[in-house]
Image (cartoon, rainbow over all chains, first blue to last red; front, top):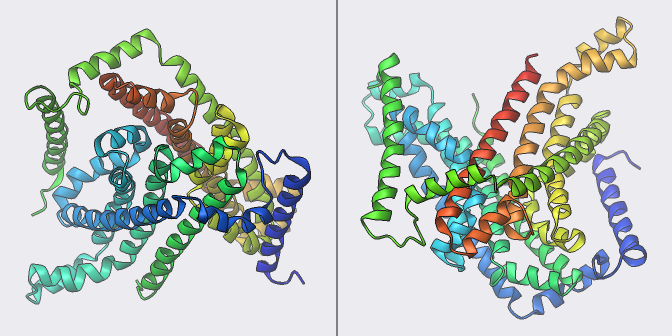
Length: 249
Length: 254
């Protein structure tokens, strides 16, 4: 019966959910914990809460815009820095240093500069998302074998042709890895900023539900956001697997 | 053309220094000459003065103690639970195939989302930050422990067994040395993201700590002081990360 690993996996999840259900029904104060069955049944209620669907829509569009901007900016900076050995040696240490600093310390600054609307969340998401794209694009450009560049040039390829037919195809796998890491960063940045701003958007509702001791709707809202994050992650992960597969070394 | 050798490195360093100097000069000019609102961009001289005042007066100590205490507790929990869970999973190929994808899937969710739940369950104090930091730190540590212990070269184990190694000897001299480097990398990652998430959750909802202090100053519009604190926190994070990286390197090459 337990011959397949996924059976054990599902069994563990089911056991955990049952423990949660029993704990929430009989052991823990219902002000703090809600059983999973009730959370599931009250999901429609979450969506009927005034303003929640709009907040979810806004968050989703922030994620999408921040991801696209991260990829575009990251690709542009990555190519600008990666294609020139001198620029790479000069600017990569600075980029890695900035990548390593905890940007969450400047979250209040983003709100001051960009306001409490979508702009600050998009900007904060981009600040988390574009670094991994830059780093992987630079690594991808760097990994192109010099002999390919030399032979392309010796056959009379123009600068654009080298870029189009040699460098781009070679950096596709690492570019998609960068997009996956960028999505992780964008999710973190946008959701951090959303939770931080407690007067509008998702943060308003999580604060409201927490202060009203309404764990059912709080769990419901967070489950919806988690599902959104999982779907977005899965899309870029599939894309990474798909576009990384053909590449052989 | 690629500048060769020392000359090229010197030029790179010069560009880096010029970049930083240009940034500071632009900041200074923006704040003093071009009339950028001091609420958006405080004078760097004032920031430096406040930074110095914070260091001298020692007013940072209380907040630093709170944040470091939360970090220590969260990391202790994440490291002990993560290694135990990872080790137990790594003991059979079946368990690895059953549970590794589960850990990896949860690790991919931005766990900061659960902060409101933790605040509801554990309150606004340090407990919710410790719980969140421990949850976030757990996954890279558990995953790297599985990777470290689960994929030890079979030849090594068979050789050790055939030479009569006991269970303890097998663990101490074959499994552990093979797994330790990977585990240490996981521990460093767990430490780093636990630190980030603790500062982040202090920023979002808390009563004390470095992240809380920055938010308080932002809400009070004390911009110079806030910038000074941001520099302070970034420096603390850099020191901690350097320390952990050094420990990791030492553990790998004793």
